[in-house]
Image 1: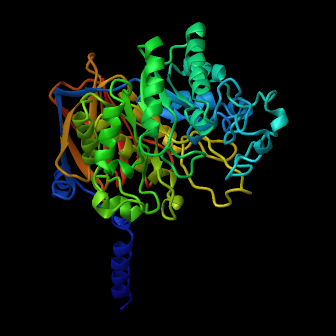
Image 2: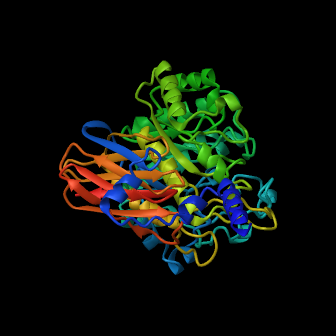
Length: 512
């Protein structure tokens, strides 16, 4: 009876815990033949094929980026907690400044002002951050704004980019000019910034034209084509004097691009001025959970705000956006994601560091496969006042959001991923959809294979290459390990590799 009870209990555990099968297995083969037979079943054997001769698209050196909030990453935090060294270790290729929605308040010549306060607001509103109060954790009273040196100014930001050899992505404030009816002053402020870069010999190619102007929570919400009008005005003036810059517009949320006629109208109206459309994707906002992630294969862009019929795969949504741009006369329009992450929800807030890193790696693989040119994880550090926002959203980063800002497994995942920078995506395919793969190579023959095992079973992965494999090394992040692990990969012949993918794991294989 006791044995029967144990069997029944085991079945119950397996039905509610997808990890239990993998963790409970006690297979001890006595020969290679037994091992091969065990891993020859369809559920345990996966074939991956890499086509080195089929190049798909190049990868920007700045593909792997990070959002830097100028008022959150204070000088004190930057220096005391070695933030620059952590960014270097992560292999960051671009930094975005001055941050997210703080861009709509930011005046670059006055970097001592609080993040969600506009210097152009009437003096009686200073220190209140309308709609937010003392929003940020590091708050400075208005009479200290002019002398406050603790926030990251533009020169400090550029020094960080230079130290990292990272691409700067810089935001221009369009909102203040519209909100205060000071359009010319806003444009002049932007031109002074670009001229300052030229004077200081700062190479800044990418400029984003404000952020989330459509957001109802913004200090000013743009209506219909109002944002397009401003984009055209700024685009004409900036490109007339600086023709080599690339301008990024954020006309739509990750939900509202589904109004395809409107997006087509925006792209057509801003023709010749905008080089990239920016979409902010926060995966599964309000509905993320382990079970949802497992069922979400391949990954979809749905969240609690989207209609069910709009819940498509990343690949499908990216294709539809690009097709819309082509219909509007911009067939070469680029796509970027200057804010992305796992969206906050009750389920995702209890994710382990391991699961966070694996899910984030799958999102990055979607961007890489479908040619999203630049990505910036939101945020590096983002802390709001508990008095204003008592239940703060969770946005996992490469470091913890609390002292001592310690490295997370996401930092390791970024480091593993960073080998793709500057390479070219090559065709690859997997025999199982729950083992997605992306591959990249360079002219010297160095290759990087990124593979996720989205399954509770340990599986044998057989990889077929077109070109010979030289030196091979690999690392893995899995749910059963607290730290990044070395991954053993066998070279079966000159053009074949095998390894055993751990349950729910992300593996990066480098081939010299």
